[in-house]
Length: 490
Image 1 (cartoon, rainbow, N blue to C red):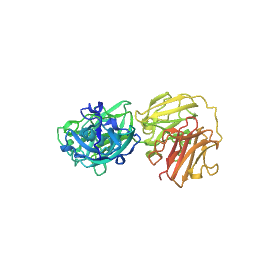
Image 2 (image 1 turned 90 degrees about the vertical axis):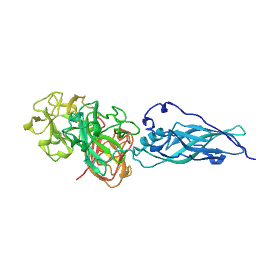
Image 3 (image 1 turned 60 degrees about the horizontal axis):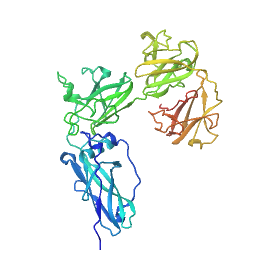
Image 4 (image 1 turned 30 degrees about the vertical axis):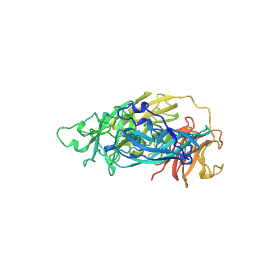
């Protein structure tokens, strides 16, 4: 004879329930815990609830996401310990075999993990963890999974036929001169903006049709975010009659620099990321050549770049962006004749007052750093390095990590302690730089990203550098440990 098992649980009603807009940010990082034995083994049956297919347009405040029943001779009681949806732990109530969650919390979780607010069903996996107490008194962990789905609100903006523009601090919020976005694929728009404030740079998106009339309706055609001053990227897009947030706030780009901003009107999210333009030295270190690209500035992130070596002249260099290499009228320099330790970058030819930049002494060991966001530069004197390397090379999977077949870099004659080589790698590989063909001194990455056409550096670290097949320029400074692996694009 079977007996009915006592089903027990707990009410999780923590701070996650306190936000009026069901803040999605708490679920940015997935949670994980070891699973127990499949619940079926102990006669515990978990199935989708009566409201497992949640449609936010008509959803109740609480929805039954799953139900459970249990009958087994050897089980005395069963208690629910946790509910995770798509790997994220969610507050719940559990009573009489019914697992209930807040619809708004569920909607928030889906948006945070998918960055997709479109009114399309999103598949969900409901994972439950239980504690079963045997008649012997032993407690055993068990688990179960069921399926569910959620469809976000259907009250979403239609794509504007005139496209989208941005207004922000970088253009003085001037509606007569908006930053227009380019449609890069159907419903997805991009723009490049340059911010000068190291702090918060405020902006919003605007429907293109809003600029047609004589009176510009700021809020009537604007789009923003849920939290004022939010610098998150990616971030959820919010509009005036938003059914979940009730209205939009103003986002910010954090920091000075050149940024690529993306607006996705299919999934209703936006993002910004640094535009990683390469910048080269033209000057004494490479003989003022209009073809020699052996001196690439080392990127620090956030549109900051640097180069460390022994400089031989008070006016040693100008700067060329990758897209303008060889064009003297598109070079960056300093104020003509200035030998100040810091200053503002000047764009243009000599006739525009754009002079060469150099340290405030004729020669010496310096680090030159510039910020392309704020258009400023500075020189920092350093001690003459005492460590010299006979060789710097690249070793990796492409040569079997052997002592033979390494890529040998050459130290630049007029930029000591900077090394360069161009080489072709025939296969996807991992590699590192090392000194003197030994592992005593080596340089790698933190594996934060693979090298690609756009990503030619990552944060330095001890791990291997991930590099796809291709032809690359290899750069390394053995004083700072900074390096670049730049794909050669003909």
